[in-house]
Each structure stands twice: as structure tokens, then as C-alpha cells.
Image 1 (cartoon, rainbow, N blue to C red):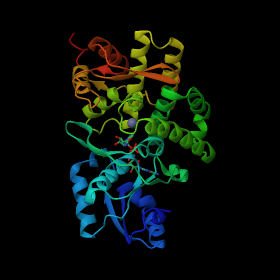
Image 2 (cartoon, rainbow, N blue to C red; image 1 turned 60 degrees about the vertical axis):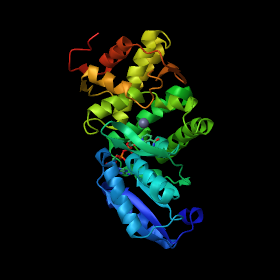
Image 3 (cartoon, rainbow, N blue to C red; image 1 turned 45 degrees about the vertical axis):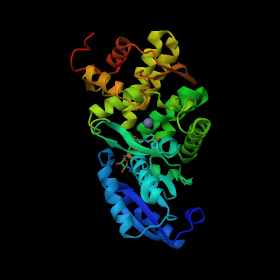
Image 4 (cartoon, rainbow, N blue to C red; image 1 turned 90 degrees about the horizontal axis):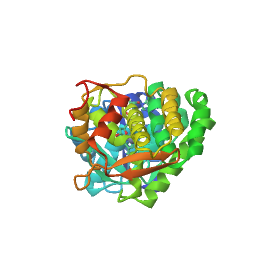
Length: 342
Ligand SMILES: NC(=O)c1ccc[n+]([C@@H]2O[C@H](COP(=O)([O-])OP(=O)(O)OC[C@H]3O[C@@H](n4cnc5c(N)ncnc54)[C@H](O)[C@@H]3O)[C@@H](O)[C@H]2O)c1
Ligand SMILES: [Zn+2]
């Protein structure tokens, strides 16, 4: 398949230390079987590797092996691998073909679709990046059998996000099939992944470069990214931060009167059942708000937030007041500084 897409003598296989142990040999063998000379680049697993320093190390290995313009970069792993390898593919030799092979639920339903690639910076998550669409995304749900439960929970945070912004039926499907999802039932996982990819790709195709409607995919992410940055990308996983951020957005929408109480309760209940609200982080609310103001979604000094208006629809607002943001944060976290100065 990869060879049909990119008929070159060589290819790069980029993965992390955990996935390399589990599926590295299998992936390498299958690429070699179709005639590729494989250049392998493995980096330590975890968000803290998503840096320009690791990107530079990848350039060194790939250029030393003389990868050429037609040589594809294959990203085997979760969203960290996809984002980093995608950024390498976008920039190496001004861009080489890119194939995603997601092995986490989060990467399958979200990160591998839409072409956003990049790395983190001390100033915030994903601050350095590009748009570079994969030529193909290949997924085998069997790989989710080795995925730790917490990673499955994190992927579900993005599935719930898709359901809230676009599809009440998906919301009910997730609720009804949670035990089967946690049992890694293949049929249910295939349906879950396909359903989410349909939703995300439809939104991305309508707005490939995030000029408008695509912003709804950031539900829970402006709150979430700030929490993640403060946690130093260590204490809190992306999906956990998104789960908390989604609850913050839902809380704010209910307080504004644009979301009914029943829907808000259903959102909170599903996030809690998935296990995403177990440990509310202790955060400095003033610091979170400061980081939110520096978010990429700030336009003309106005912070834009995505708020649910029902299960199945959301809207973009740009008139959020500091006091309502602080109140939403207080609902999801235990304030370190006794709340925000108002
Ligand atoms: N580009 C986008 O549009 C987009 C969208 C959402 C998230 N993201 C990014 O994705 C990243 C999070 O992705 P993630 O949650 O997949 O994290 P991840 O890539 O760090 O994977 C989580 C952990 O699971 C391990 N792992 C991966 N597959 C495994 C498997 N099959 N079995 C066992 N262990 C496995 C990894 O080694 C890692 O330790 C964040 O950096 C986030 O910013 C990007
Ligand atoms: Zn996300």
C-alpha cells in the first residue's frame, strides 16, 4: 500500500520507544517485503519528546541515509509520533510524502486526520507546526489491545468532543458501548473509529486551514491546553486535559443559559463514566487564564471559545468574560491560589 502511494527506493519509519518494541519489527518487515530500504528513527515515548530538538535528530538520521523527495515518512504510533513525524515530513527537503499508522485511539480518531503537524515549545503546545496532509492513514484496531486503559480513556475524550459538536447518536453509542470499548471489542472499535473519522474529516474538508467552522474541533482545548502547559506536559495527559476542558466549556455554556441542565449533566456523567474526571488538578487559576490569553485561537486580542449549545452542536464565542472563565475553571479544578483576583 505504502509503496503504491510513494514508489521510492527508501522510506523512513518514525516511531517511539514503546511502539518500537511492540510493532517496530512487524512494520519494518512489511515495508522491506515490498522493497523499501527502511531508515528507522526511534525517540523516547512521551509528549516531552515533541520538540524541535528531536525533529533535528530525525533530520540528521534521515539526511545521513540520503532520503530523497519521493521517500515517504511513515509515522507508526500515537499522536506524538504522528505530529512529530508529520512535521519532519512537512519540512524535510521542503516536504516529502507522509503516511500515518496510528496505534492509539486518540491518534486514530483525531490526530491522524486533518493534516495538523508540529511540536511543542516552552510558550505552549503545538506552537511550531505546519499543515501537511498524509497520503494515507492505515489503522489496525488490534493494536489497541496493548494500549493502556488510560490511553483509551484519553482517546474517548476526543470521541466525546466529536459527539458533542456534531452527533448526538455518537454520544449515545459511546455511552451504550463503553464496556465493549474497554474490552477492546474489534467490531465496536472499528465502528467507533470510522464514525469519528467521518465527523472529523467532514469538518476538515469544509475548512482545511481553520478559517472558520473547523475551530469547533477545539471544544475543550483552549481550557485543556492551558492546563497541560501548566502541568509541564507531564502530570496531565492531553485527553485528560481535554476531558476537563470539555467540562469547563459545558459548565460555562450552562451558566450562560445556552445549554440546558439535562445536556450538561449528560456530558458530565459520560466524562465521569469514562474516568476522565477522577483527579481534578490543583491549578493556579490566574496562571491558567494568562495562558489562555496567549492561545493560538486568540484573534484581535479576543479569546475565542467553543461552547456546546446542545449534545450535537456547538458555537464559537468571542465575548467570554474573565469572571465566567474563572468560574468554569473553579468548577473543574481545585484552585491553588484560592481563586482568581477579580
Ligand atoms: N494533529 C492533530 O490534529 C492532533 C489532534 C489531537 C491530538 N494531537 C496530539 O496528539 C498527542 C497525543 O497523542 P496520544 O494520546 O496518542 O499520545 P502518545 O503518542 O504519547 O501515545 C501515548 C502512549 O501510548 C504508547 N502507545 C502508543 N500506541 C500503543 C499501543 N498500541 N500499545 C501500547 N502503547 C502504545 C505511546 O508510546 C505513549 O507512551 C498530543 O501531542 C496532541 O497534541 C494532535
Ligand atoms: Zn485534542
